[in-house]
Structure formats: C-alpha cells, structure tokens
Length: 533
Ligand SMILES: Cc1cc2nc3c(=O)[nH]c(=O)nc-3n(C[C@H](O)[C@H](O)[C@H](O)COP(=O)(O)OP(=O)(O)OC[C@H]3O[C@@H](n4cnc5c(N)ncnc54)[C@H](O)[C@@H]3O)c2cc1C
Image 1: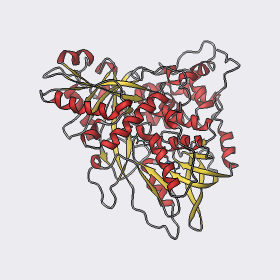
Image 2: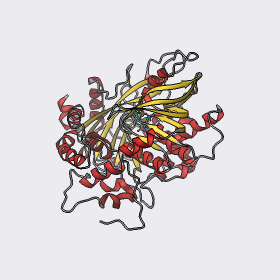
Image 3: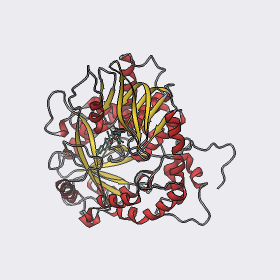
Image 4: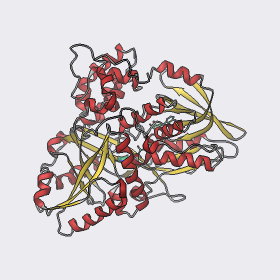
C-alpha cells in the first residue's frame, strides 16, 4: 500500500548514521546510561523540555528487566495490602497516563479474585473498593462483588470446588518491550539520540567532577567518548556496576544500592484460562501474589520473588520457582498446567532498593519505590520503582537535578499528556489478544507499505514487513531483537520462535545486517523452553 504524500515516514534508525551522530555530538546536556523503562522515560521527558540528550544502551532497548515484567500497569494490590498507600496512589495515577498516551500498547483488563472461604469476598472487596478510591478521578471501572455463578461464567478456567464467589476489579496491562520502543522512538523524534548495543565502559572526570563517559560500540568495539554536562545512571539492577566506575580521589567506596529479586513467569495456551478476565490470588502459601493473565493470546502465570546476590544479564529460573508456580496454579485452575504445556518461561530481575546500612533478608520487604542518589562527582543514579511509574520517576529525576544545581530551571514537564508514537487517533488495543498490526497503532499502514506481493506471515501476528520495519525504524539488529522484543514470539512460544528464526534471519540479511546472531538466538530459545531444561 503506497503512502500518501502528506504522511511523514518515521525517523530511520540506520546504525551507521546513529554512530556517526554519536561521534560528532559535541557536549550534551544529559547523557543517560541504560535503555530500559527508566532511562527511556527520562530521555523523553528531558528532550521535551529542550535538553540535548544522548542515551546509551549496552544491549537492546528493554532487554534488561523492562521486557520481562508481568505486563501490568497497576497500582499493585500487594502494595496496598502492605499499606504502601503513596506508592499505590502514584501508580494508579500513572496507570491512567499510560492508558491514555499509549492506547495501542496498553489496555484495561478485568481481574477476578475468587473466594474459597466466606470471609474472603467482603474482605478483599473492601480492600479493592479502597483501591478504586485511591485512584480517584483516574479510576477505571468500579469493583464488583460476584456470586459463584458469575465467577464461573467470567472465569471458566477457575477451580470450581469450594468456590464461594469473588470480586472483580480493573487494572491495566501492556506490551512492555514495545512500550519501551515507543518511548525510545518518541524521544528520538524530539531530538534525543539513542543508541543500542553501546555499552558505557568508563566515566570521565575533571577535577573530581563528572564530565563525560566512554561508550563502546558492541558491534565494532569502537570506543566513543561523549562529553556531557550531566550523567544519569538508569541501569536497573546494574546501577552498582556504574557507580563503581565513579571513582575519584574524593569518591572512593560505594555501598551497594540494589538488591535484585528474581521473578519467573510461565506461559501456557489460552485454553487454561479461557476468556478475557485475569485471575489474581492475593495470598499464596508463602504470602505472595499469583497472577494468571491472558496476554497476547496466551496466559501468563507468575510470579516469584527470589533474592539474588548476582545480576546476570540472562537469569535462569530455579527449580523451586517453577515448582511453586505449578503447585499454586494447580490449586486455582480447573485444568492444572503440566511441564509439557509450558510454551515459554522468562525470568527478570527487579531492581529493589536496599534499606540503607542494613542488608535485607527478604526481598518482598525491600522498597518497591525508586531512589535517586547524587554522588560527590555529580553522577545521578536512579533505580527501583516499577514500569508503571517510569514517567513519574523521570519527572522526579529532573526535579532532583534542578534542586542539586545540576540543571538550570527547566520548563514544566509535558509527559503526562504527551501521546507516544503510534497513539494518535487510535482506539484501545486488546492486549489480551494476539497483537499483530494493532501494536503499531497509527503507524500500521506504514508497516503494511513495506509488504511485498504474495508474502505470507512468518507466524501469527508477525509479517516480513514487520521485520523490515523493525530494522529500518525500530533499531533492530539481531534475530533476538525481532523475535523477543519487536514481536513477542519468544515470550509466547519459544519453540515456534526457534522454528521461524531462519526466515527472520534471511530478511535481516536482505536488510544489510551481516551478523544477525542467529546461532546465539537458537541457543537462547532453549532457555525459554521448559521441556528442554
Ligand atoms: C518478574 C518481574 C515482574 C514485574 N512486573 C511488573 C509489572 O507487572 N508492572 C510494573 O509496573 N512493573 C513490573 N516490574 C518492574 C519493572 O519491570 C522494572 O521496575 C523496570 O522494568 C525497571 O526498568 P529499568 O529501566 O530501571 O531497568 P532495566 O529495564 O533493567 O534497564 C536497565 C538497562 O541498563 C542497561 N545497562 C546496564 N549496564 C549498562 C552499561 N554499562 N551501559 C549501557 N547500558 C547498560 C541494561 O542492558 C538494561 O537494558 C516487574 C519486574 C520483574 C522482575
């Protein structure tokens, strides 16, 4: 389909051009390290306020934690139970902004908390009414008490034995990796320069003050110095590695800021929880929350909360975490999933902020709120928080930097009402359903314009045109970038992702990418397949 002459093409993300710009950028107002939700949100906020911004991501955008979430845009029922009212309230407000600014990537979803004891419906119902009240004018649909028949009707996959009604409430869900990309591209459209596969290896100081950094292009190993008036470390669970580079005469020892907590998800076919309602169990045997959420045509089960001392880039599930999800799901699903039913398993690390001085024993008690630290040299570190609160975190970081005299006063924040690329004139996508073109929102016709005659889909919801679009306009460099984060096939069905990888590889080569990391991707798919672990 040809483009109309009045329609502008999205900004190309040709790598050699991005690197050329990076090498000749001069001094920037703000260099951001880390291209997850936190760094990308900051890049957008800062560029909208007129700052010159460079963002460097060591891997692919969102490859860290920001593509491995439960995919909920939520206040957090668990945090309500913990009495963390301010966190819940802020997140509920942010939920509304995400739903409004990215309607192609986020939508409302109804959750049901089934009751298996008479006291549960009134008890949980009252809590959820409070959740509604905290949202205030930003609220979604009202919480409802349900009888047993209604629960079975809306949630046909639920365990019916001893069921005594339940409560329905509303929250949001989203496509995390694609929201990250939308943030990256929207920031780029505002003038920010964002480069993936560019790792920060050194911080540079002048008379004890931070004044730049050195980045390494992971494809060519070229070292690129960047001069920056300010530097923000937004590297999630990896913030302490960057803080360790901030070593000057005045600024020597660092206490670790982050305590990683691992979360595992299992993905099964939609028949295990038919319909468009999600299931939430507020208290599992060890006091955690269990979700079963329809997402992009599958059902996501999770998650866990396991403290880790290390922070690998590709964390793997522990056997006890998998057993925990199976055994808890078996209690609440009419048809308990077995090992062979798992289509994908993914693992992420939450960047939880340690309480100062003491080392936390249990990560569920460690703060979910974000922390901002300014070092003696001027390095700003931001970590913690949630995907849902990325926008508020960015606003906070810039306010903090102004308060510390690192930035001159800036114009007011604009991100509350700033639609992301693809959002204009789009109705809410149904994230419970398979994504396909709907995930591109108002840009869908540009994707379609890249289709060649008689081409067939690579997999449901993934076309050759989408792969071309990902290379030309969405920073994709490898087979994994396409199948894990532009399309979400790896997260939905790892065996199928391995099966279609050769087709993706061939298109990437046609697009001029020589090293598509094909072999590495095939190895990676084995970690996402439970049957093979
Ligand atoms: C299991 C799980 C479930 C979750 N579910 C939800 C949910 O449903 N809803 C919600 O709101 N939140 C959820 N969260 C929390 C949310 O995902 C995180 O808070 C958020 O993604 C953190 O984003 P970030 O940008 O701080 O970190 P990251 O996404 O990890 O980004 C940091 C980036 O820094 C890069 N980096 C590291 N070192 C360097 C370097 N030297 N140079 C350049 N780049 C570097 C990394 O590659 C990485 O991409 C969940 C988290 C987990 C683990």
